[in-house]
Image (cartoon, rainbow, N blue to C red):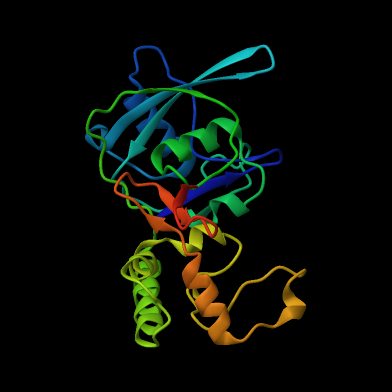
Length: 236
């Protein structure tokens, strides 16, 4: 799954615009998509997910988040006077793009929860009772994660069923957005800070330590990390 972003002189954002007289949010989203990107979509593929309210100084901002689940055409630049270019980006890399236009960041978080962190507060008024299914990661990441998990498990470096489950399910690439997928799922590479780089622990010790501290999923969809002192898990 990828997202398109616009780049102009001031900030990074997504397709957006104002609602014209007599338009619904969905109709406005379809029209703005065509006007700004050249992509076309049907009104039936436009789903209103939520309405967001945030403040900027003394300005109250209301933003309707519409997800368009199907479109046609090719990404072009119909309005070069407004944008420099459009780019496609993998979801796990969004947090490494730099400063995002705040309403755009909140909209992306509404569609793909967890892809961005540290956003300013916003009020969200959910609308869609049955929003369309949204994929959260590229198929290549799923394939690489399964291959990595099988190699680690076959090598005997997964000491429990919980660790095996974490290896197979935790999207490691979201925790290293500045790294390519190949690096995130390399079972023979430990990403360490410059402070720890001089220690050079053995490969086996790296794997064993990583296995003990891997985050694991719970039934509520949250990540929990083992507490090294008590053996219990704490929410992340």
